[in-house]
Every structure is written in C-alpha cells, then in structure tokens.
Length: 149
Length: 304
Image (cartoon, rainbow over all chains, first blue to last red):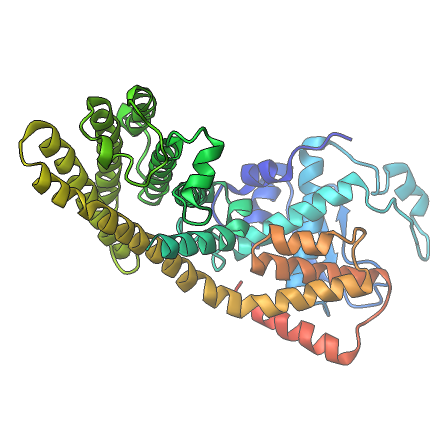
C-alpha cells in the first residue's frame, strides 16, 4: 500500500506553524464536507482506544472519558488521521469495516473484531497523531538547536 | 589557548550531536566546530606537528590544511549566523571567501624550500612573494568573513550573542595585524617592526576564537540546561519502563525515540506507547509506577 509521507500531509492540512484541535476539526470538516462530533462514551472499552463512525451527513468519534488528556487527544488525532487519509486515499477497508460487513452487523447485540496488527494504515494514522500532537504542543517546545532559536 | 579552544570545540561537537540529527539547519554550526577541531588537530595540538606532517611528505602541507580548515570553520560559522539573522544567500560575495582556497593552494605550491616541518613556516619564508600571497590571501578571506559575520550579528549582539561579536572583533584585529605584517614586510624597510606586529596574531587569534567558542557553549548550556532538568530524568525513566515491559514491537524503538525526538516529544511518545500497552494487554501498572506516570502527564498537560 502506497501512502504519502505523513509530514507532507500534515503540513498540507495545517501549514508550518502551530495549530489546535479545534482548527484541525474545522479544516477536516471542510475537506470532508461534513462535521465531526467528538463524544466521550462511558462503559467498558476493553482493548479499544477510540473509534469513529461515518454517517451520511457527519462523523462521530468516540473516546473513553477516563483516559488522560494527552492520551485522549492522541486517540482523537488517530481517528482524525483515518478521516483525513480516507479523504484523499479513498475508502480503506483494512482494518475498517466495509459497507457489506456493517450491514451484516446491523441489529447484532455485540461485536468483536480482529484486525491486522501493525497495518500500514494504522502506522500512518499513528504517525499522524504524533505529528499533530507536536504541532499542538510546539507553542512550548522550542527548537532543539539553541543557536537557531 | 589552543588546548582550551580544542576542549571547547570538542564539548560543542559532542553536545550538539542530537540537535544535528533532529534539525538540518543546525548542521552548519556543527560542521563549523568540526572543521575548527580538525584545523586545531592539524596544528599539532594533540599529535605533534612533525608526526602529522611526516605522513604528508614533511613539507608543511599541514600549514596549508590548517589554513583551509580554519577558513571553512569560519565560513560555516558565518553561515549559521546568516541563518540566525535571516539573511538570504543572494550575493555572489557569499561564496567569495572560498575562491581564496585555490589561490592559496597554487601560491603554497610555488613556495620554495618548504621542508622541514616548522611551526614558523610562514615567518621564515616571508621573503618569498608566494608566501606573502598565500598568507595574505588566507588572511584577507578570513577578515572578509569575520567582518561580514560581525555585521550580520549587529542586531543580535545582545546577551550571550554579544560574546560572538566580541570574540570575532578580537579575531579581526588579529587578522589585521597579520595583514599589516605581510604588507610592511614586503613593501617597507621596517622588517623588525613588521614582525613585532605580526607576533600579536597568534595570541589574539586564538583568544578571539576561544571567546567565540565559549559564547557558543554558554548559549547552548543556558538554553539546554533548563530543558534537560525538566525532562531528562522522566525521559530516561519512561524509556527504561518501555524496555522493561516490552511495550514496543522493536527493542530499538525506545532508545531511538530518546535520540531522535526532542526530550519533550520523547516523553510524550513514551507515555502514549505505555498507554497503548496497558490497553492492548488489559493491564494497569502498579500504583507507584502509575502515580509517577500521572505526575509526568500532569507536567506535560501544563505545557499544552
């Protein structure tokens, strides 16, 4: 699977400067032409860290409320990475569910899944989340070279 | 003085390696310190001059190499200052000092009776025009680069940056002494007076460069130490924890993150990896570890 360099796509999305979660949500909503809602969902999450649902007219991203702020932001950026990647790469059925699979799951009482660990898409969105966290934290972390700062 | 300069440049070279890996713009000033170190080495600071020169034919090629490396060191230092001052490379004058290198090589080749190896190689052959051209060209290129660097630093010369300007001014005076020596020796009958002026070169040149290198080191430490104090222990502890619990697919990843990322980003990445590990294994760390992770996270939260 040929995926574009994460840093290039992050720069394309946010430019060179710093950004915030609100700005990223706004830009992605413009690109995808539908709003993105963030929801903290109580309950047992098992090994899940977050998930996104794609509806006709909006996206929903669910995260557990008990996680730390840093981890929650990271997991949200991870899911936003999926949305962003699909906006220019088209639907990526692995490790997401295809439409047919979702239809099969409709009405089910519960659902479990096993996805390919270390899949390129997962690695890409995880790198995306790291890059985004740097951009939201870079207000405080300055250049590592003091001679250039 | 040469040994002090060698020690300062060695410390800078080592301490700045992480910055060089992470930021491409940091490389010019690092390359400058490496060339400075090589120039000092060729000068016989560590290994005796005679030993180094004997490998190169024993005809004082070390003198030529020392001049070229010193010029390159000043040139790359000038380039870092240019970046610092946001001065674009537009004028042909930017590379002009490097044009002196072929002139120096040719004039050096034309010097007669170059053997034996001697620290006063230039002084004892100053009666030859080739020596004057070789030495004069080298000094003019240095003076040009140093003055241009001082000019570019004019708006930045405050606090620790002022030591750069002071050091470089001393270097400019040293170089001017040598140029005066060359001109007076060639075109006037006052040879002794010329030598007297020329004798100031060594003292002033290395003193000036030492002040500049010390300023560089002070600047580095003044900016890095607070950051190191804030994150270093946490970064090392989290990296150790990642390794201990096998939180990563690769055993190299934790160490690589520590080296490849800034300390703060490294701490952040470690926290995420450890949370992923807890979630994937449906486990939680013992209370003492969890408390420490929470404390680090709170510190990181405060910086968002």
